[in-house]
Amino acid sequence: MKLSSTEEFTEIGTVDEIEAINKLDLPLSDDFRSMVLENRPLIDVRASVEFLKGAFPTAINLPLMNDEERHLIGIRYKEQGNASAVQLGKKLVEPVKHERVQAWLEFVKKHPNAYLYCFRGGQRSQIAQAWLKEAGITIPRLKGGYKAFRGFLMQESEKITNESNTLIIGGRTGSGKTILLQKLSNSIDLEGLANHRGSSFGNFITAQPAQIDFEDALGFALIKHAEQKHQHLIIEDESRNIGKMNIPKPLYDNFRKGKLIILHTPMKERVEITFQEYVTEALKSYKVSYGDASEQMWFNDANKGLERIKKRLGLERYVMITTAFTEAFLEQERTAKLEQHKEWIEMLLKEYYDPMYDYQIEKSEMPIVFEGSADEVLAYIKFILI
Image (spheres, rainbow, N blue to C red):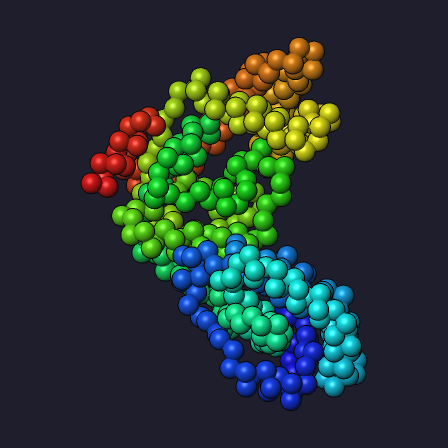
């Protein structure tokens, strides 16, 4: 047996046992579209190390074998061959069979429409399905497993983005593009899926998903959007990278075939939007996670954000902005007032983000079909949907 790079040897049943399971004729499903549209709960019986590399938005990891068991069986297979690996697998898993089955049963009790899967829809999900059958529960498993379902998501994502009439909301940093996007039912929030605000200061306290999780979640969102038969797909103007996530190139290229709508927002309002998001709301989040150390942690992380763009800012502007930031933080510590932070925010918008935006717009090949305020953009979008 040739081992794939993504799945070690995981067989724990003899040929006769697997044939016996096959004769049970337990249900399979490859109706992947319905699984997406129904948000069908899924039991992923792969080991945790596999699950963490990528899973589906509606999946829970309840493994047949844990990481250590899987690792030991893989070593035994490589060193002593198939028969010995099967024996070790049975020895390791049989004592915990009841525990594993109970975990599956508890989940199915709460989610009676659940399906289960392993990597290729093979032995691990077959065994889990058979053990559940012994316990009196019959649930389908995914035909082709994780690999087949993910293949469907990637294929559909490329097809949908290629066929979509895409409108892209652009505008300077702090214009309120995400706020506007959230008012539209035919939009997909790429930054939300990536758990990142899409800038040098865009990190949330909670980590970004795994790259594969981001791609799978985007696939779910696109399929649901396509099912609603919208005339347009509306997204925010993003670079291909959103923090550590990257939009798959075929999808990104398809998005860039769209048309651009530019949102114009006065500087004062942009400063206020940026202040609320990166200072006021960020400090609240840090408080929840770090308690008394929250303000210092926020200050340290914001400084790291400035450090990341030091080269592009140039030394003079970097020193000017970091000095203003430090002074605002000291004022915050003395008086608990945050208003002074607006000074360095305005400097950053004018000295860094606006010139970068002007350059990107100049280089962009996407046609601009409309420009206006938030109200005007919303009115335009509603008009073209008539």
